[in-house]
Image (cartoon, rainbow, N blue to C red; front, side, top):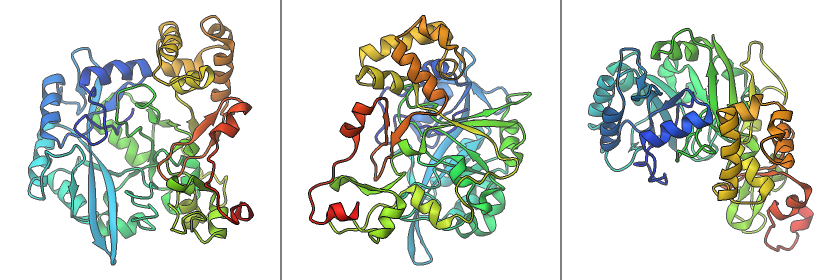
Length: 415
């Protein structure tokens, strides 16, 4: 399940985001259920009504039976404790009737028709109170909880705990979305997060298979219903594992300055007092640094009963890296489609296909990278300040891909 995506009515999203395209590529990816994204937007909600049907389970289906869960994201920008807060929350809802009630109440706060992820000047406490007043079945999940700019723990506008943000409404928070720049192991370093289910979603802005499902959740359910999914989030029972983007590939893993081509690990940043050595301005503090600030456990600690996870690079990226071609190029699609035709979907290729069988279908170098990816042996140059990290598929790539800082007197002494 990938329960956090967007529609084409959100900013910076693909104009080809339609229900048919989402279904097509979710099946190719190997997903069984997808978030609808953006149910607060009136035009997208109309398309959901036209393309999906309800059957009383809380799960909506297409004509061919592919499943969606009603989902949207809300941006809250407000002042608390004399600091501007910018927090994103995911909402899950059990029916279109409940969605209509949510939208009617949110319209009292502001407009819904200008963006798929609307912004309101209300705090998280008021937001949860409003949702629970509408229906206790609505689930609120703090989104990408470590992202610097728009999250509960973000270095730019966040809090130091769930309780500080949600206060008496914390009792209604059962799960946290780890985001692309962190994985469960990083979150395990905070003992205060042990009680929460750590979920992973793509936050995709397009329908392509290198975006949707790049992070997702694997549940083992007797029946696919909304209530069963929420029960997993509340209890962690039947939560098998998560598939994770490498956190190093996330856009905010390390500290840095994109405009100055400066990227640092937390120790380097602290040594330089979190100041960019090129322009002299504060660095964008990344997720790893922020985890270090709040952690009360050493790196490598694993809580009892923790849900396991696997880091995977999407298949299209692997093929593109080997062929040294664009991820959407014809060369990459040709190899990708051969593998999907043979093995059914991308997750089967990445996780289950035997090496000998793969070798019959595609180039040996691509097979080697698939197996290396499966064993989590691919090095990644970490992302920073809005720049995605870059996987290294051979040593000759490494020098080309590493950021080259602008010339600056004394910079070599820092590094």
